[in-house]
Length: 154
Image (cartoon, rainbow, N blue to C red):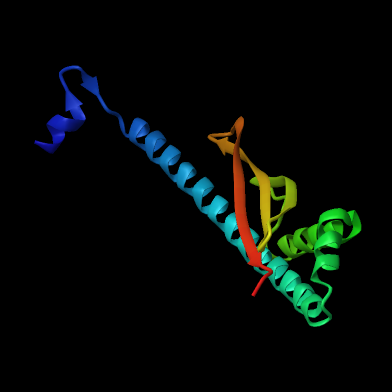
């Protein structure tokens, strides 16, 4: 019965074909696992961004100048760049942004202000280089997007 499934009147499914299909499935799983690791590193760094914003807004609220802080966050490119640089540095400490298998680039951290919260959105592209059987296939790019927020009114 099992032999009939593999070898049929219409042709046979060779061991090589099974091996190639299994290799593609494992390659796909490897890319998904790497993408999950990149997302997890980005989530951890978003938590750090949230903690820094929490610390800054807490001090601003204690000093009764939250509106000044919100203006700095919205208008001050230096403050936003410091948050972005801290985010990217933290990502580099958690994972390699460039390896033989993938490259993480186009990392953007942007902020949106609402009346009661600050929302931050991280986007990046993970480009995977696929090598199989001595051939280099076209790269696979996965777009990664994560959001977080911090309430500013209590």
